[in-house]
Length: 258
Image 1: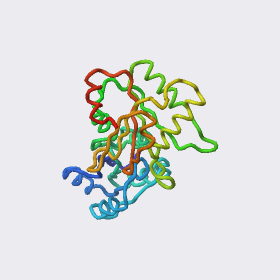
Image 2 (image 1 turned 180 degrees about the vertical axis):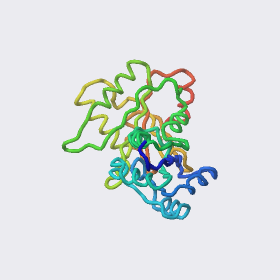
Image 3 (image 1 turned 45 degrees about the horizontal axis):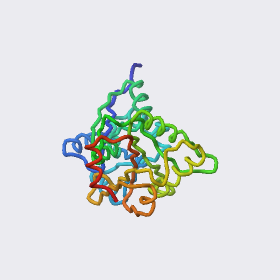
Image 4 (image 1 turned 90 degrees about the horizontal axis):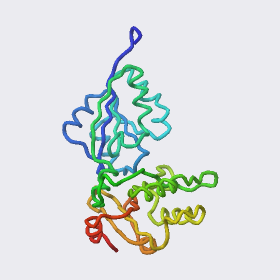
């Protein structure tokens, strides 16, 4: 470390699924010289943003480019401690790992306030056995020059190894918002027609989980043909493609069957 370098604390604070922080976490965030809210890995309502700004005066909202560029946060660390508020659990997704690495290379310290994430909460609420989950995949919005099919290959890998697949649905903060389950199912059907991996048919059974962790949460288990007819108005949403079920898993999923 060079003479005159200033060592600060980077505090990554998880807001959980319902944009909430325990009292101890609030006290830690309030001690930071700069407070930022990352607003692109999940949908945060204007009401929730306003409440956080009231709780943390001076808080700045950052989009994907501003966080991934890192300059704003790293410059703030030169002046004092920084708190970055993140939906869910701050390091479940890999999007913030580069920032942590840059901060550590600059000799800053790190503290993480963990909270519930969509992955831990949805897997728990699905009633499926946690140790039987394989690779997590994301279904991205389809664009003219961007139509990756690698998630479908990972789903095939999971099924062949008796593993359930947790499927995240894309979020476009500045555009389409949260991907709807019926759009995700249509993309899966498109991939099946294109790749012929015999994963998704009208009879394939999946779980759709909406607004998990909130009062208006909804879980439905059924065949693709049935689920496509249903409306889920409480984003964000995620899917689970079960592999071979244990008999207890089968019985528990009956409570969600449509």
